[in-house]
Length: 382
Ligand SMILES: Cc1ncc(COP(=O)(O)O)c(C=O)c1O
Image 1 (spheres, rainbow, N blue to C red):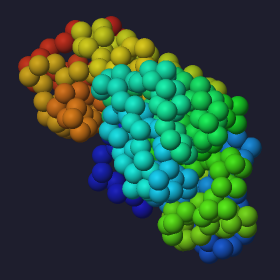
Image 2 (cartoon, rainbow, N blue to C red):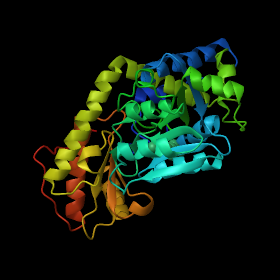
Image 3 (cartoon, rainbow, N blue to C red):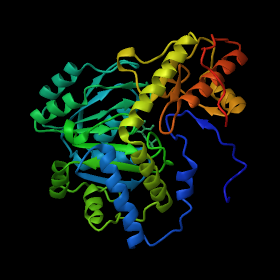
Image 4 (cartoon, rainbow, N blue to C red):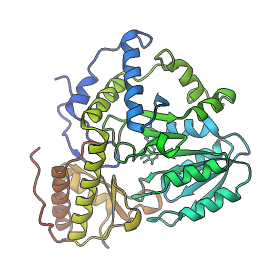
């Protein structure tokens, strides 16, 4: 197979990119075509339709060739105009970046902060919503990938935003596919996710779902951006096109990965994420390690663990990857050196969990910090 056979396949227990199946990798072998041809229109329309299933919406879904950060710019530019008031719960690196994207778009941000490892109280956000002048929107990260905390009150935020005639926008980059977030039922106005996490496709695409209220707003007030213009995306999507040359191979892969997701069903995929996360929490606690995220908000897709004293996160992850071909990662921003982060997303299985736990146990021992061995740790056939 014309593949880089010299690259060892590792078990990726990262908060993205995640393991991509051969079936999805092979979809990328399809030849390039005219992106304004019926063959490609079928792919784009297929992704849109499956995207509606993923986001549980009957409304608009567009796909843009970009990493998650580009999608964040797109959703900020779509609604925020200079001087608009915007409430942003900030409880980690990605929610901080979301607040900055809103500020770059000209928004006046009221941050509702929580210490790392916790989430803001719903009442604090509701209070900020009621006090913020000229409120245009609430922008929130659903699952804070830097701390392993997820907010459980998206529906309540939608309600509070709508009571002030504002929008609710959700960064679901590390949650959609691993959590059920029914956009239409909960009244979420706009939500973004990336291809490389719970969908288990390669990195490089974002899906943005938005309701007709957002669509009407951007039609009347087009965003001031060329590449990330949702109005243009919608116009072109009417013909099954993207405004600019799409990353065709990635579109093929995403289409296939979403087909796999539909075959599994969202319900079962979410249940699998919940099960694998709880197995990981159980195992790290059995090892005698302390989880970082507050129990009340800990995530189904990213497990955070405090680094035991004397353990360097970089050395730990590099040793584990080198010796066992299992990749996890360390802390981000202010948490650098303080935590280990284990992604449990996409195609993750209980066997992957056991392999990871076994590799962690052996790596702690090798680095001179032996931990208790959880009973269930066995090595996966790879
Ligand atoms: C919640 C969240 N938002 C945004 C991003 C940014 O995505 P990307 O790194 O693909 O640009 C990430 C990446 O991990 C994320 O976890």
